[in-house]
Length: 443
Image (cartoon, rainbow, N blue to C red):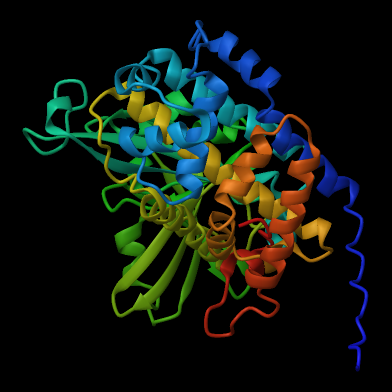
């Protein structure tokens, strides 16, 4: 009888110190001792009976990873299968507490901070001059009509929330968020989420944040802001690019300036402008692109020319769409575009839990790249989410296990699956990734 020769499997590479550090920090946030510390700090669930904080956190994470809509019924079904029977009323009450939202928000913060510290990621290329690039935007969430008193919507008689979320281009992680009624204004909500600018960071905003004080505050903190120019803003042109370098101008209005220059399609403008009067006067940089006849897209920024060229400013603003893709990813995965409860605390707790689970997926991606000795940018984020969802139960089993052997084993297995199924060795020429061209490997 013939015997088939068997080839010994190649030994998997030893994980690097960076990969090991990320793996340890991911596991650490879900350790019962750490969860109990977070619970005690926020005053959550002090009685700690059958529905403990640790079990509830794992339940929400598994619900998101499995692609379940985050309703009480679906979450309770996961809890019962994993930890045993619990009555509906006490299960729901575990989320309908102010401390529940605080607990899940604190867990998200602890997880993201620990992974970011251990990952050692940096921006490269043109964006390497910044400590990070962060995108902030708001997204809506429909709520049952019975919540219209606590969470009024923009449409009369309806209810809804507005989430302000922040996304890091350097790490690819959804860092934090804050919830309010849908009628809340974006800029005040953002200021609650981010009281101060961080030095060296470039912030990307849409027109909902457009105000002069934002640019002044960023400059005072040695940070940078980039956003579109609102048509109602009255700026004065102080200088523009010419064949002999920068040429001064006598404070023309933007409309008058456009009457005397070419607006041919593809023309790039790079102007120095002033905005405001008296003590509110601020000097900024205005970049424009004529994308079709008599139509120019303007970008107002504090970024100097020695950091980004005009074309790089235009490309950098296009990165703002990454947070819109992230919102779509969250809503399609667990239907976060609507909530099946009208309780504000439960809405916040479940959404923070979903954000924590999403950060876990992205962190597995961050860990898999150095562990398998491949560039992080080759692992496509959305494809990674689809792969990790197939291992939802195994990941949560490993997080619930008392030792770390099960966690190390499943992380290694998932990492190998990511390399096999979510790797893009050569980006498509027809679908260029602006983030990679600018040096944002984590995005």
